[in-house]
Length: 374
Ligand code: NAD
Image 1: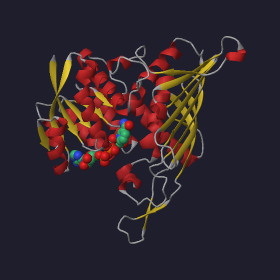
Image 2 (image 1 turned 90 degrees about the vertical axis):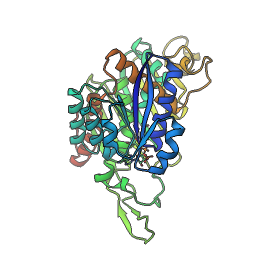
Image 3 (image 1 turned 90 degrees about the horizontal axis):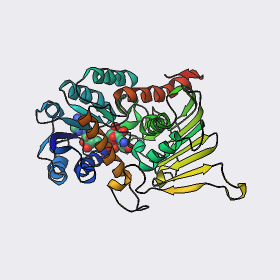
């Protein structure tokens, strides 16, 4: 088994998720390439001192520039805040490394375009953290659609909601400033929905959107009672039209009380429908217009060994995978693409198309009209 050196930058929510994926990918998937956990990097020295050995990394560093230039590194995992992705990814690609970068690509479209341009001429491969498309249940849904079971796709409906900003008293933070946080719900959540829409239906061509900031100010964290301005959107919704003519709707909110990780999909076909909700990620619901009308209805299909990659984790049906497992599948995909010299999906070129859609929401809302995003 060939070894490949891994550097992980960032030890927060996604940092742990990547660390788990790099630790699990060989036990779960085998494969011809085995990750060698070389450097864990973060500006938080206490975190890397504790987590470096716990995650199994040989070394730690607080200097990401040294890390991406290190000759023992082949793949750089970037799990830092959005505003750091461009500089880190471009430096790593320039040093000949493969880059696995969290979504969204960057703060704005210009930076995302620079990243895609850098990836287009680099020797290393690029991958973005669109983990939800890895779900075995959704890979099976894709197969059901490709087999023609629900007929031709005629409509897409997508909804993504969480409540992490639903409390109006939540203090202001840098995330609310465009220069530091970039887009609001569009960069955090809607981009995942777009990745799923592109996966199931095709690329979005045009859209008509509206966005709203529900809490226009939030109390500053210094407890003075002063308010900070929230510059980015809490809610974003749109009518969309795909390249292939299919119509769709998308709505997303970070102020939706009670929603923890709702990603609801409906794919309407000429003779059936598929539905999914990420809060119940181990099932898809399928309706097919066949058989006697009086016993027709949605069929719940639970994830199990017949579905792609499920049995790598567990041999019995219905025993349930979780969020972190999707990242293990993503890591396996990246290693396989590196081994076979295939194009990863979603790479920076494909990711740029997602960025064009989410930034298109803002343009459409500002200009109050349909805009082209392809
Ligand atoms: P986080 O705040 O939990 O972690 C970020 C980490 O980066 C922190 O440990 C911080 O100390 C470190 N960091 C900051 N500046 C650094 C620097 N200059 N050098 C090295 N380390 C530095 O953030 P998070 O929630 O893990 O989000 C990180 C990224 O992951 C974001 O882009 C976010 O959009 C994305 N994300 C993706 C998903 C998903 O489902 N794919 C989910 C959550 C977050």
